[in-house]
Image (cartoon, rainbow, N blue to C red; front, side, top):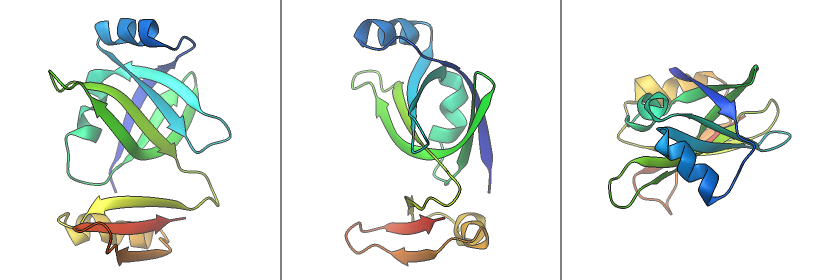
Length: 139
């Protein structure tokens, strides 16, 4: 399975003023959830293109201030007017912590589902509540 690497900086300032300043510098603020603590970071907008502009499920390795976090995409926010990426939420993959990820069924089985199952995925099944989605319970 493909892994995208993104290098970012730790964010200490929060709020509208700080995020607007980041966006004016073509940076995207983001948060990594799921680990011991939340990590607020920012990275160049161009670094997220390979992660966002694809229908395939991918892992994302985020490097922030010398630390590396293995993550998956949790949520995205786009500007309503110009459709630019304005915020990213990622979910850290932690050893012995189960994660549920929804992926599109239209994705090729051999390229996406099979590698996830080979990575010791606990289960893979259709989700009747979300038509056209598969739910994968990742370890």
